[in-house]
Picture 1 (cartoon, helix red, strand yellow):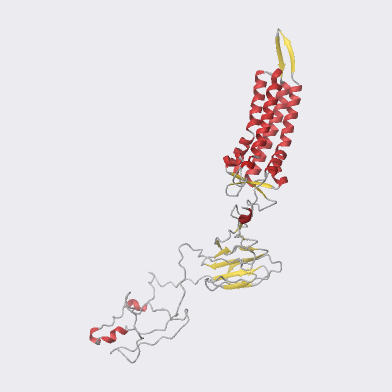
Picture 2 (cartoon, one colour; picture 1 turned 90 degrees about the vertical axis):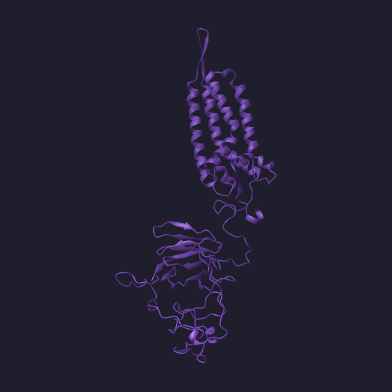
Length: 428
């Protein structure tokens, strides 16, 4: 675990030290208050009966128990939310759940209940002594039970020494499904993404770049274009599926009677507008007489590219132009794919992307830190397993860390933080 995930299980000595530091103060308060209470018990004899005055014991014992309960609930809340107690912080350890996050109230309570079972038994015995006024034998009852409870607590705390799985869990950890890690010798999983962590933990000489999946659910991968041609005219006749392609384009050397020859198309860029032309005739038609091959008649819909809206024609709304403004004042218009970093570079097999290099003398941002994919209403931002992480602050001031490798939608008006740098997303 230490080699692959950067985690180090807490040793039995540190566990015991933390437990002693946590319970030394409340234990001292209980001993002092109950000692004062027992010392104040008076005994009088009346009518052949011995009467005990336990007012001082009830008063001081109640104060001690009340302070201990308050301390216990405060400590439980702290550990449940962050894995931190007074002893844990001083000894450099943290308790966590089975996934490496904060253990939660249920897990902490169960661990404490198992550890302090012997002490609880001694407290119940003390209550019985007070109720039945067995003060003459109280020392003989409570002293052994207190020693047994303390010995049990120590045994449970250091029970990870007998765990065959790398001394990872004690008896109370197994029951509560919790773990305890040494955050001085290793990583703190609660603050760094759980047991798996936020990083891939690859060697530093490898670029922190991985294949970027489409963040849009169900989006198909763009196929690699080979022998790019001009886009097809949606109104032009195309051969049926499965029909072999013509061996050569139809030229003026083989005209069809009554029709103008098709205009030959040259190699064009993928975004070049299609050249208006007459419907083309498959080359296979040259093998048959013109009378046996009928050219499809024109259709009224051929003059319209889209369905008309009742009450008039509505033009398609122009796509929003998204821009980012870096914290140094520079402003950029975004392409569909953008890689951001100190010296961003795409991995083999990725689509061509706009490369946005950001100056960072402190080297707080990674070589390829972010992948930005534009969408109509905003952008999808993916942290590329960066070392210092990324976050998004929405217009209402809410800051949310980005999970490495997980695309997050960012709307205009938000600010994206990466390392010590940031950019603001807006619309042109």
